[in-house]
Image 1 (cartoon, rainbow, N blue to C red):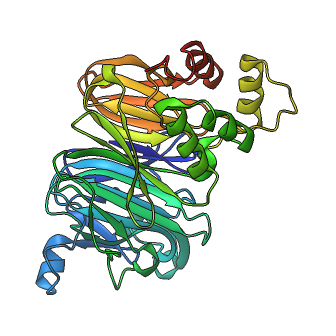
Image 2 (spheres, rainbow, N blue to C red):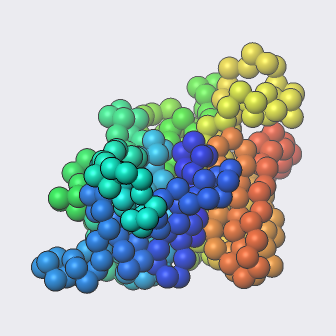
Length: 382
């Protein structure tokens, strides 16, 4: 799997050996030594699993325990989370650490007096790992709390439960702290992916909410409820399941807010994400596509990105109301896909697992809005 940094300057990739490479997005050169594998960074120094066990550390020390299945950077770029095939969640934090000048260098490569020099560098420091679920971790996502401003990390497992990590309590000393009690969110279906949905990403104003609420029928009431939810400050958690459904849960109480049908052409959804807020250039392009005035006050429609385990990737307009005309998809790769990444603005990146290729797609929000409008109103789309 792979992930992009919050500012696009750094990227990460993980693979079967259980280690993570951090590379510069422009030069593709390593920014520091690989994380994980047989060596994990703790406090700025390298520590092997063997040395950790000899020191009396638990079996959950030393980085990933299996092949990397997902990587996620926090929005502020200060945290990196990984999951692996053994169901282990690992955390790294971007911190300033003291580094000796002779670290990683031979004696003959050092100048006079350099061996004793110590300087500070920003590095990804290993925090710890935990098993938040009794089964595999099928979904992981970061967000920023809209009221308190700190990072929040949530995981969804094949055990049909959702767990939230207490990021504020995580440290190199405390390790990874699983916060609130795990909540069961499914009884018969098995979750396959998850992502946070921020209230501002719904893109529905008060006038639009009133218009949808007056349209009547299941579609109108669903859109009105989603619009009302979008205007609140409550974070929402979206999940996909093997029963071809998309569900919205309260970010706090984890109670179900809505259940809709997933896009039929995608198959079982394995990746979920949302496009981040667009910049001035993307906003100008969207207005040009939709014919909106430059001073239009309404925000861009929110877009959720999804991907199947094989071939298909696509987008769904928010709010989720089950409208089949509000989604579009493509055959992104000929075989298995390794990752679907949503990027700032209108770009989506898909990574092929079998063909070893990376594709960048541009999402036309204006065209999506046209497709939704052309499908009709009230009960017509259903």
